Image (cartoon, rainbow, N blue to C red; front, top):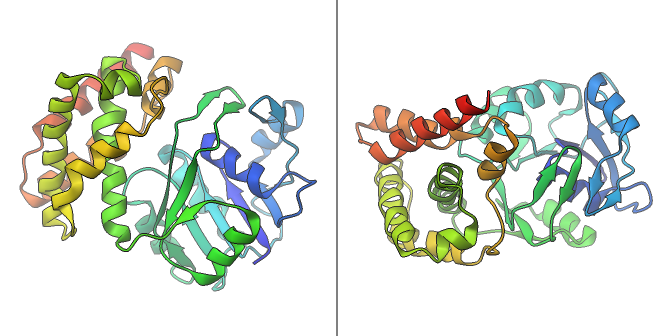
Length: 295
């Protein structure tokens, strides 16, 4: 495995582009997939990670490149564009990792590229801070994914942290649950991780949201849900106190959020399965109010 494309230079994308790329590292033949507008922007103002300018090799959608691995690290709003942009680089030997939040991106990618190997995956780690083209991240995090021996060897050689859980579906729903109860509530309540995890009233509220997610997950056939509340709250306890969720940062910066793939997805699934999701409906409405106030 040698030829790698990363699509998306936000906090997660830049973190892994720095680990794998940089023209001096030579761990793989890394290309950052961009459109003409972003190419011009990055040429004038290089991306910055932890105060250091990053010197990447860029590729346009119509260029020729035979990708062994494609990592999609856009926001959810950028997924449709990313799926179209990678078309020229996908073959039957291509592995695609989608590090997006939510639980539906792999299905979307797989429907577009049934010939590729689309592995269920996500990123978990300390939150990063993004301001313009600059990202600050402490390096704590890993890619959680389905097993693929070739990819595991590649990540071992490149020094990329990863985990292969026994049950990837449960793991993805656990991450989804964390986003549901922490991302959205922090955006509405303007709370850091520390303010959430040390607030008993917040924890009681979070448990009610987790129970709502569990009721949907049970009907989706997810196993191991008896551990969901404890695992989700344990994950919250490990976050650094001063950190802010990505949705909290989006609201503070006046950006659109990913509420549609969190509460929006829960509302959709609730309707399909006949399960009431009142907490997610309220969170959805409140985040949308926050977004409207930023317009």
